[in-house]
Amino acid sequence: MSKSSVSSSVIKRLPRYYRFLGDLCRKGYTRISSRELSEKMGFTASQIRQDLNCFGGFGQQGYGYNVKELHKAIGDILGVNAENKLIMIGAGNLGSAIASHIDFRKKGFKLIGIFDSDPEKCGQEIAGVKVTDVAEIRRFCVANKPICAVLCIPKNSAQYVANSLVDLGVKAFWNFSHYDLKMEHESIIVENVHLGDSLMTLAYGLNNQ
Amino acid sequence: MSKSSVSSSVIKRLPRYYRFLGDLCRKGYTRISSRELSEKMGFTASQIRQDLNCFGGFGQQGYGYNVKELHKAIGDILGVNAENKLIMIGAGNLGSAIASHIDFRKKGFKLIGIFDSDPEKCGQEIAGVKVTDVAEIRRFCVANKPICAVLCIPKNSAQYVANSLVDLGVKAFWNFSHYDLKMEHESIIVENVHLGDSLMTLAYGLNNQ
DNA sequence: TAGATTGTTAATCGATTAACAATC
DNA sequence: TAGATTGTTAATCGATTAACAATC
Image 1 (cartoon, rainbow over the protein chains, first blue to last red):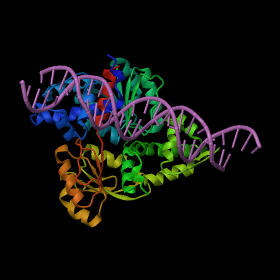
Image 2 (image 1 turned 180 degrees about the vertical axis):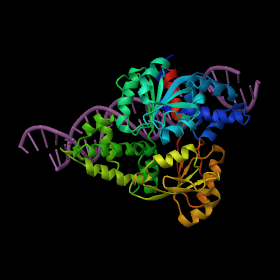
Image 3 (image 1 turned 30 degrees about the vertical axis):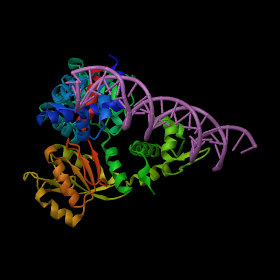
Image 4 (image 1 turned 90 degrees about the vertical axis):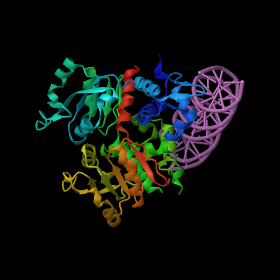
């Protein structure tokens, strides 16, 4: 299945559907129409039906969607039940907060290692994972084959570290380093998170009415 | 000036331009053409010129753009030199990491207060700001008139807290609470950050080639 | 002046919305 | 069966790209 043909606009909405449907499940909804869902989510009903039909016909005419089934289906599309092995590089403020704050298992990942260059941090435990010296990364990757890395390191080392990790088999990066990673192989997946950019759009909003 | 007519696609690219131009300044560039910038940023030259001309003609035919001037101009459009007073609600893992990690002053904000309901945390200092009991928020807001709030609180209290803060004059929210805020007054600016959603798009990528 | 590169208009492309026949 | 609501095609809208005349 060439799901890669699905546009990124649609893909970025999937986690949102997943979240809302999870909430609806918990609230005891068993069925919902695209119109009802559109009112709750602020999308149009048309868009919801259009989006879902990129992946198959989950609804039933005259009835709507089964909330639980749809939630499960979207979870499967996203791959939230996978256990993609993930390591984190950089256990500073942000790194350790993310390690503790994100429920990796519920998002399709398993945190198997945290690395830092600061000897003070090595040996400490964060989110149940021991912090290891970065010097050990190569050995660790060869032995444990992580597929994804969270980068919480300064921007000047981000590209170098990412390149090294690609050579060690890492296929995806969740990058918090204030630097836009550019990867050679286009099969490498990168999600650059720029919290500062997000904040600046707020400044823009306040600055311009 | 009805800058509000500028599309959000453009606005979301502004911080990126700002970052790249800052880097170019530091690297000693004095001028740059839209073509050169397009190669560095991965946009098209056309888009760059189109984007910039939403705000005015910053370039010069036959020459290109003055890096320093353009950087300054975009900074002014974003309002990075403002000192929008900002408070943070919730000093847990994520809240305190963000307070320490983000350079608010460089983004147009000034962190003037941090609030938490945990008595353990009250009195502690984070990023040079003392953590205060949430019970004090009303008094604090009346006295100090913050215009923006960062929400690092559980999702079930997010909407209630946001509504209360609106009544106290807060105009903008940077919301990390795993819940999509819906505000009555459409003048209230909300930036919902969903780190989990961002991570799930990575899971999707790994799950689908 | 000639060359380069902008600002801007026009063309294209993609994403969103509307409409409706199919069908539960 | 009649009513509701989907899946899907067609229409609209907006954003991106291309082209080029203006001009430094």
